[in-house]
Image (cartoon, rainbow, N blue to C red; front, side):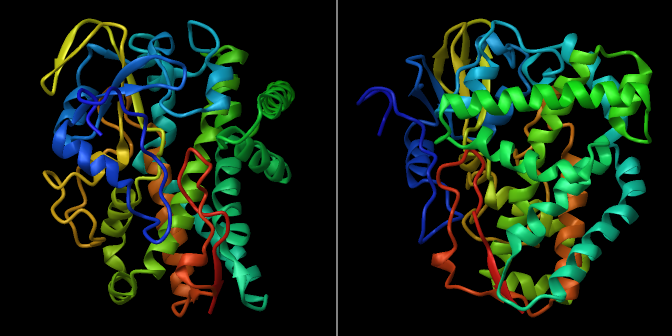
Length: 402
């Protein structure tokens, strides 16, 4: 498995039954033997894979490593990324592929929309959305697919509420998000998705400019500090980002239902919810593709010589399960000190929407288990279909009963 003895490795990312939560075993071996190892990318580039928590954290705080688009290569086939990264520079508004000062300008404009205080103000509305969906669930006969009836529509409606996207359009967005994130999508399917998104956002921006509403998208347009193309780029990022929340809700419920001692502890003491959220973010580590950075100059990293221009990938599942940082990492423990995981990254590029993800998870879990404390899987745990072909780990369906 060593990247020096047998040549570069390819990215280990698939997680399968009977351990749907465990990262690939190859990552543990790499961390022990060679935590910074040569990695072969699908496009032929040779860079590096990091599986060690302390090295990953060091890298993410080091301004010699860049998020720039022209220095990025992806470790697994991502048709959507390949088509949106065709040029040497990031499209307008895609600030996650920029370095300061461009990146700083966007973050300063957007940070105010995602503060803890702003999320607290949104909470009553988000709780009402959750309760409305639970009312509909309760009116039906079990079994029921919790993904279809709760985990998917809940964050979809929440992000539509925040951005000002009409909720009746959510089904189309969910479909196109699935196409974008599937590694089995054809170039033709991805191209159609990109054309749909571009056309839809063109229309939406024109509507908001003519008649602004009480939403983030209208504020960005009226403020005038971003061009229309930048507004559309920022909106695309946040719409795509909601897929992470969908799968954290679905996988989080799946994990709790298959770890009944942890669920019972949470039911007995709801104040454990914050620790539950952070532990699930660490334990599930649903980002299969990892975090990518490009070296701006030659750098010594973990005993390896990284050359300028080489791409370094951090495996989030590997670093979140590093026993040097998280004792007994394969044990899901909602009382674990809730700090340190790298699910949202670290440093200047740390995920801007992380507080929204946390508040959505908090409301989704507490509302669901308060209403259905006897919730259970309606099929054997091993029969829950995993999203094995997707860049974000999750389940296709989650059949439940109560």
